[in-house]
Image (tube, rainbow, N blue to C red; front, side, top):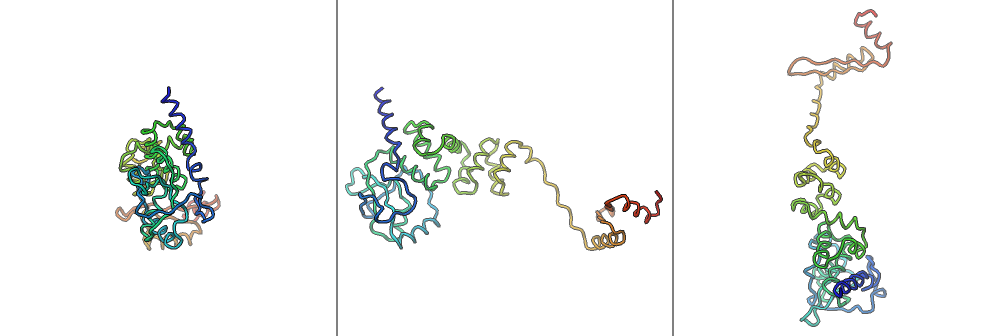
Length: 298
């Protein structure tokens, strides 16, 4: 009973998220006047990334753009850190690893930080919250972060949805992505398919093969949903393109059309020497005129 009560108190405490630890979450850069009062500067080399950070990939182009900004203006939003046990004056990053990486590339010697005493559980929660709110995680990283909180700290999906500020259905659908084959998860992590594609792939018999087709042919999410409902679509061969008419056939069509005053279509099969001649009429009078020209009496 005592253990359950402690877990309950812990979950309530965790629900405060970033807002309670560093003020309301603000994705816009903060001015010097807006920074929390307990911001301090520490040497860049005294910071280390959190090995449990759900974010694993850093797009080089985005990092380069941030580096240019940091080089010009410095780090305008402090990095959230916690003390590194056994190493006084050293800290582990909770949120802001991208800013730290950009500062290193920009050649900065110090970085502004906010130090907080938090547990492993709180550090992971905060890292996920910040990245999700900034849309910095790809769908697989987000799913792995949720799964880590559930497996290690016994979160229910309802509790998790409240902590991160997302709906339960969003949490459930995101976690389902982890059931996909590794090749599909790789496509998703690399941005070659979307989360919408991936959710539609979950219900198909061979998601890996269909994912290859999405990348190869640029299928839309709606295309994949249709295939999931009716797999036979993949077995239907697309109609062969109609061969382009040669110049002589087009010229003869025009002469006949000019002579008849009607639209004429010739479908000639060169290899057989046969084909079809179609004359389109709009009313009975035009049909009578064709019959008269052919010498046929009505």
